[in-house]
Length: 467
Image 1 (cartoon, rainbow, N blue to C red):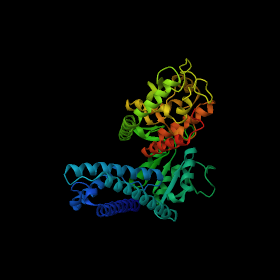
Image 2: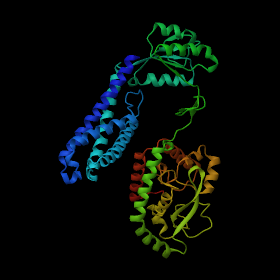
Image 3: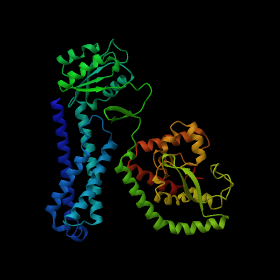
Image 4: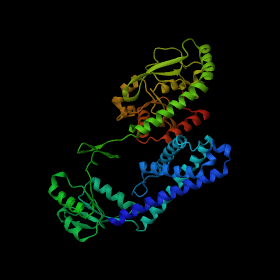
């Protein structure tokens, strides 16, 4: 156990040292490449002070975010996301402190160049380090010996996860059960009954114990826990929920009571909500002030000439937490009584002459930036549905209402992955809902930027389903 903890500390130290080397090399290199005018006011006269502040800021940001590379299972996107967060936090804190203590202010060009290169370098360095660490574990280094106690669906799945990937670094010594179980492969050693676990641990070197015995057998579980606690062995309880839940769960404490939650959306965290809202405000303000006035004059005039009625079409739709709001669009159809009941179709006779064009290019959605500015929508999120559809599909589609846990968006993950336009059959709406739920469970700021990029590209190329 002590060796494992020491190895983890070494990993963390190496990562921090490597990050600091990259940080200083990149900064000093750019400092000498850029001229004094590009660097910024007084920035070129305080290198030593800047380096001290630069490194202290990194240590502070890294302390708050931590190092995760030593963990047994770390997805690449988590490594990249953490590198991105560290870079953003460092930029905000460093620039603020440098200005506050009057060391100097850097130019926008220098800051973008420095932090852009830093993010790419940190992500590449950590991914490369993670690759070599996995290879090291694959050949037996930094491995942990494991004993399994009990047998059920969860334990079987846990065994497959541990034994199926040697790069994780687990070495399963065997399992304890009332009788030899067919849930494990024949070559997995059967070590005896649960009451014999403590005797085995006294004789054999073991670092982790995973137990799935039901709580009714507490007279057998408690002695195992006590022995593990007194001999630096990690004890893990494996709840038997795989019979009815086949998904990732999240653990939290309600007072002293442990609770497993079905999902934990990233946008529940305050910093993520603030980041997304700040981006929404910036993006919508820029669009409404720069692009929208010209579009409104041209498209508005064309709509007025093509048919009688208002320029804007507004409709009540379902928003965050099911709250209703007025959603704005450029009117692409003649005024009709079926607008709140019937979706647009490919050859819809209600569409105006300009309607096909503005729907195909998504220009009809532009007024929804007003909804974004008002806080009713986000630039990216599940598309808001008309109230009639919410009422109908909430009864027909499992988890349909989950998509309302976040703000609806002008564009979304479902729309850029093939689920845009009319939903003629139930499976089409089911596919859209699945992607909306996936989005809110896997949200990242980079994912939002990617969806915006895909939306713009699809609009330029044209979409068959945009009608």
